[in-house]
Image 1 (cartoon, helix red, strand yellow):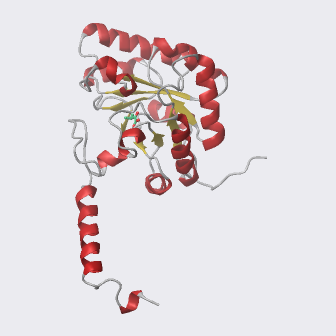
Image 2: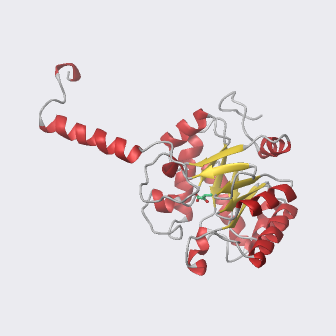
Length: 272
Ligand code: KIV
């Protein structure tokens, strides 16, 4: 017998595939904690990514490399407790899958068992095919990630647009086709030319989710802190900010400080 938390119709990998087939765009955002995940899920997002960008936006590291598997499981389990509807995908962090496929599966099993998430995401193509195959053989859905792959930042040297040259573009298309043939349910394409995003989305049958990959792919993902304007300095061309929460929160905190200092807070009605 299965026990369901709510009656909300859950988004599954099959739902995402059907969305691609009928041309309905897929929405995806990151979340790393219970409160943010509750709001995002309630708003109707299709996919929540517990991204290793938590290393940047939650922990303040310069890159995604330092975050550990234990820390990803902590973030993922907080998110899963909040979610009623969205598909929850968790990034396998740097070091949890690159060395060999057995380690990749062991890391994945910990994520699935300890957080209750629904799928994992791995960065890379041909070079990680053994890990992708082994994780899939255990029945865990895998999302790929090609183009700018932040875990390889020290190989690239910069966060600039990837696959502008023909050779790298061809390699990316081949990697995307390989990931699809292995059985990945979707692929994230990060910071590549829009025309290349279009080509991959049209060639492949599985959903292609872009971040800085143009408008012709099957869905979009952003880091929620960027969309909400909590992070201030990060201003890539592909980012659309919907709020300026940094300024709003700072303003609210300044008012609170003033009220405490002036003994305006708490007032008569705010005490027992
Ligand atoms: O970690 C992350 O937030 C990501 C997205 C940028 C796709 O991988």
